[in-house]
Amino acid sequence: MKRRRFISQGHLIDSGILTNTLNTIISEGADYEIIEFKVGKTNALESVIEIDLICETEEQINALSPKLVHYGSYEKKTPEAVFKVASDDKCVPEDFYSTTNHRTEVFYNKKWHQVTNQRMDAVIVLTEEGLFCVKLRDIKKDDKVLCSSDSVRVFPPARERGSEDFGFMSGDVSPERSTDFVASKIAAELIKMKEKKEKVVVVAGPVVVHSGGSRAFSALIRGGFFSGVLAGNAIAVHDIESVFFGTSLGVCQKTGKPANEGHKNHMRAINRINLCGSIKNAVEKGVLTRGIMYEIVKSNTPYCLAGSIRDDGPLPEAVTDMIEAQSQYAEIIEGASMVIMLSSMLHSIGTGNMIPSWVKTVCIDINPSVVTKLSDRGSSQAMGIVSDVGLFLKALAEKCVPDFK
Figure (cartoon, rainbow, N blue to C red):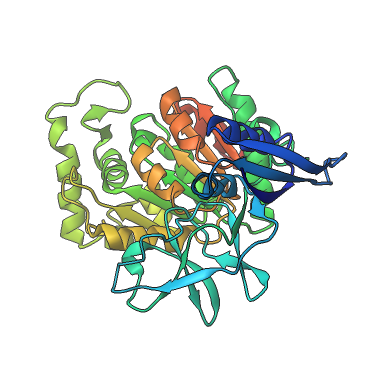
């Protein structure tokens, strides 16, 4: 039998990390022996456990070790990290380490070093400035790339403690809650973060407009609660359509009935913006006088409209190069303390892949399966809310913006 000793430290019990670690060992046909277990007896104290991983072969240990690393375990006798040179641009050795969104450290030069720009689905590169997460497409020939997980330890975040404003339902998804109650909790968090000048970024889909949430969303932008907006071409088009023609997707927002020839209103909106040259020009010329995009431009809120194959137009500001759009998204969300996802599954998933697991994430959608998919991404600070996004935004604005009615 082969043995290898691992250490795990943190809030292991209430977070479920210990259970996941031990269950993984057994499910893989291996065994373990607990050598020492020190239990943290208060919320402020972490637990520490040493276990021997017991396998029949060295190959089985090597295959199982990365799975334990994923849960935050690391070898007691951690070997020095192995860095191999990239053979060409965008090409790395076969045994490269693929990152998670959890805080990560690498053991080299006989001590642990923290990795910068943490995100999932990247590789770790060693430079003179330190260790960095780098997307595969950004790898350059001769970059020093970390290989294997033997010298890695990750820190899955424990459930936030002591926060009644946010932690009351972290990691939970249920439609059986009062929208007003949940909005009150998130409003309290937003107000607190604004006072502390923390960064809150919103990912928004066109449903914000279709569901009647534009006025509330605009008020929150005008109130300075959001530090950035990430979206697609569609929300801007339908926001502007609603301002110019009172319709969204050709449906009258007052009566809920299709407007006469309303199907072409979004194209008319795009054309009117094109005649101005850009959304910004339309605002400065007094053509666009209210709405979401108006408030974004007037408040100088950073934003990116990522284009897609479905887009009509698109609007002049839409970024149709997907690599460039990803780069702009990453720049806007850098340093964010919270990301709020409003009924935009694809843009939200893309954003979720870029942020580390310690960023608070709020996902709002009328479809429970979408909320589950977006909130279940390895963050203990993910809040899933099943609600009509328009009603939710109105409730949120009423609690954040004093003069909103």
